[in-house]
Length: 334
Image (cartoon, rainbow, N blue to C red; front, top):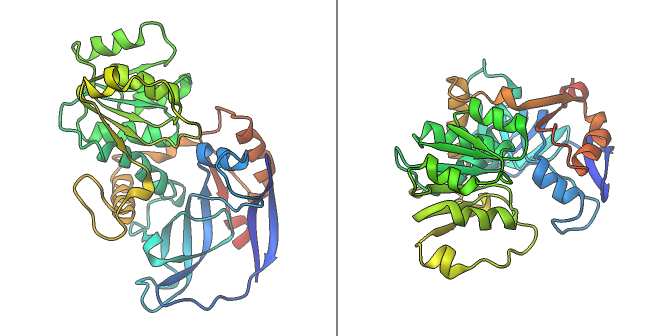
């Protein structure tokens, strides 16, 4: 059997490579799958492609996949032919994962091109869920990439009001409005902090979900978050954050800063405000199926895996037009 994988062979360089794959001997809780689609996470994968996230080259990256089960261990709970969503998959024609990273897709009518978004959507949801917003609390999301846009939609479903999206990119601000934002702003707009205070009756927002990982964005968020408010850190900070006046910006106004990295989730048992990854993935698949969230609006391109060098060259340059890029592995696995 041949396996094809997208490999980061050097900084700013991605290749589609072929290798020999023998039929695996699975552990009792493992699943072996043929991939249908994988989804690129532009922020994280760009950092890895540029060598900003550590680790040596070559690298095999990935985030989210939809696949068909080929073989399943007797304790996995899955069976051959079942369509599943895969957490922390790689960009590859085949996946081998423990069952804890795999979630069944029960709705046969849900397109795989929509279902593949459930992993990244769960990460955006984590940024909202960790703050535990109440109905009617105001909320701002800084950074309207895939995670930020899903955070906007999940906050809207949670009853956040007013709901504010912040990003440089005009198209992403428009998508945020489509996903439920009441107002959208540029982070460099003059008077952004007075405008946020005007939108929130003078208080500032109760919750800020910071998705950019940019130190300047965090400093700004502390200035427009209301006293007693919460800031969740979803974005992965790749550089140290300096020059925060903790007395003025955090201690005196009583602001809580909450780490919301996806790896902080419990593996098996949910806690209040922090569900397991599988539980959130399953929830989002139900919301997609019910038409409460429309991930298909975020698809920029669906391409063959052979297009990986071109796609990742654009991602390395920070092309803002690439939002949701899917690799169609059916072209190899059919």
